[in-house]
Length: 303
Image (cartoon, rainbow, N blue to C red; front, top):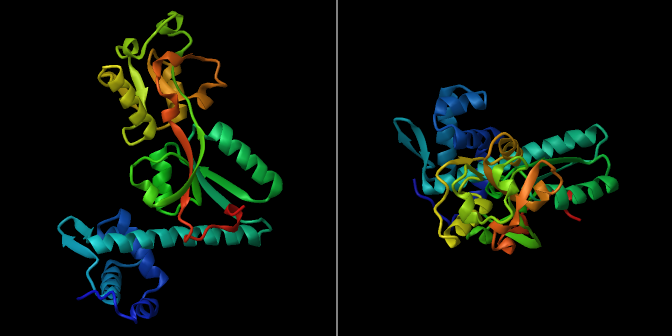
């Protein structure tokens, strides 16, 4: 099979040959490389799924998957097709959910992603204002860390995100607008032995257990820069935790040290802030991320 970019009939051929079930199968294969499992996910038999996949590759006129003993592996072009299939399925699911909401007398839905550092301030105020204007709008907030909301945005599972870039190339994928700087605080529980010390440096805290976000998150990357600047290695006694609320619980239950956005710990009386720990508070920036302008957003998103 040969793929030709200059084929004027490519779009009509795909529309004539591929149905929603074909795209659903491709989306299922994104998470289930074994064809039998993907077939079950879309409620067809394995022979039917095999024929559907053959029809899909015939329509595209190039192979989408390499066959291996452990299942199917997308080719480079297959990755692009599978990503689009997943996005189309997410878009269809949101469309149908919004349509059902309107059928029942509601006013659609808005799905956004937000890091927990932005949720207490920026997102909470924005959602409250939106709900005042559109009380029947169904608003869903997803996500914990910037890398998580970035993934949700890439998959079109959310309309837009409030977070930070988690890689150097994401500015090529998303349109964005700066919102605010955000201060990070090194925190311990109030009963922690360090809480009674008058002066404390980041270097002096590295001997204690630490709770930090995963390496893929901008907050963790900032902390690694701070350890480097202080001439310290990453603490050996470390728990990686993506959940802000789980981090708060772990800090309260142990003598661990954590690094959290100031907006998260500001209203919690059970924690002692150690602001001496972070040199560059302005390095941790909040950013509003959204798909490029050529991607359609739900009406509730455009304001």
